[in-house]
Image (tube, rainbow, N blue to C red):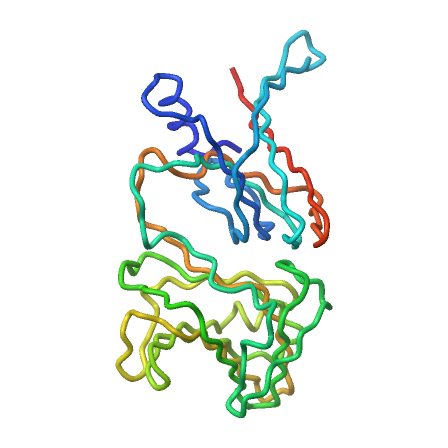
Length: 293
């Protein structure tokens, strides 16, 4: 599906008003259907992006005396990238201005050593259920009516330029119905943090792989945190019904409100069959942008 931005961008390119000499291909894990009206503005959960190596024309007979037209862009995922690819998108490689508060991938939860609880213990690392990002995830086991938190130090993240319309997206696997809430904490010191709570029907309804989102406008604070984040905490609380098990895939922050007339998602595709990319070997990906004349 070519997005509304994509249609404007291609029209501007044909009119000679913008350049499209370089392209990026982005991959993600969300299987939410493409918006038929072209309103998609980003992938549901992007975890990797890289330049397209080249583009080519694809013209085929439609079997009815006419032809279909498309452009194919190709790239190669490097051998160290792994995950379950469910969505692919095409972007321009350049933008009008540089935004230091762009969308950012914060963590993929693959390295359990950086996460510690209150006594310094690391969470278990698992490969089952199947990770959607990377080759493993951390497992948080929390007893009935208790709360378990793990904290990791990160490279300093300045969130002062993000607005209330920007969002935080969490990908995880919920194994049972005993999960009461998940709280993501952004620490500026050991005692002060911003936090977002994932709870309610999104948690109580269904199990399995989930991707949940919170606007930054819903963030609350504890203590008096600054905008410079040095640690991230994940806190899991179980219901009174029993022990809960949660497996974490990825966490990212999304810039939702920055408008650039020359940069945006041109097209998004949800794969009918997910592509599992394993570590250790490169994989070629071709993205076809279908054109209707």
